[in-house]
Amino acid sequence: MTVCDDDLNWRIEQACREGWPATVETVADGWLLRRSGGRIRRTNSANPLRGERGTPDKVIEAAESFYVGHGQTPLFRVPDIADELETALDHRGYQLEGGTIHLYAGINELAEVRDGQVVVSEVPGENWLAARFRIGTYDDADRRVFREMTGLIVGDRAFVSCERDSEIAALAYGVIRNGLLVVESVETDGRFRQQGLGRKTVGGLIDWARRAGAHAACLQVVADNAPGRALYASLGFSRELYRYHYRRKPHEPR
Image (cartoon, rainbow, N blue to C red):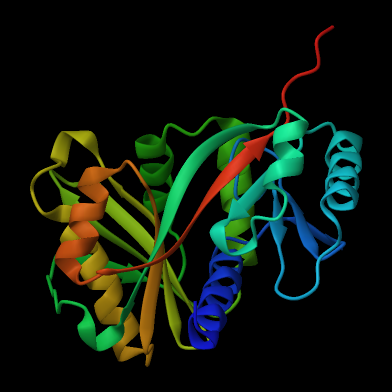
């Protein structure tokens, strides 16, 4: 990995965190402990920060104390670029889950997709939120957390959607941080898949970001999500940067 690659990776880490902020964040031994409640892993996990970090055992003990103290199961988000905890987590029986890929592209490398049916808004309207909760099958706690999270976002942002049969069938949102578009929350209603709506929606987000002056874009996609990866490849997201996964503390036997 070159110095330039390392710098880009850590800028992506920061932008993606800021694109999906947590309610509570505290730093311990070079790791950011994030907590929001609900089931969303990204905002309820320990994340490495750039620079010097503590020894694995010290980090794990600090995170366990934090999460257990708030009645949550300790969870670590471990990217390839900061995997020094892996052996210690193995020894403690932490379970692996949720492999995810970071994709990246320069804004001029991305397809130009414009469609008059794509609606762009600076804030998430009630129809947009209702569609997000319906498609994502959110429970009451997750709805509350997601509403709070979108209200915490700092910077230029856009919430986009595309309708079919008078209801939102596909949606996404994006945040621009230091010239970098972070694509988030891409969803298509199962009843309307294979109609190109996801491509139109993300394309609308890219078009907004291009006009807003973004120079590049990134996103996260689950590694085994073949349809999602094909969608993003069709838009020009051809460069894989690094991957991450989660490690969850097993339940203690009673």
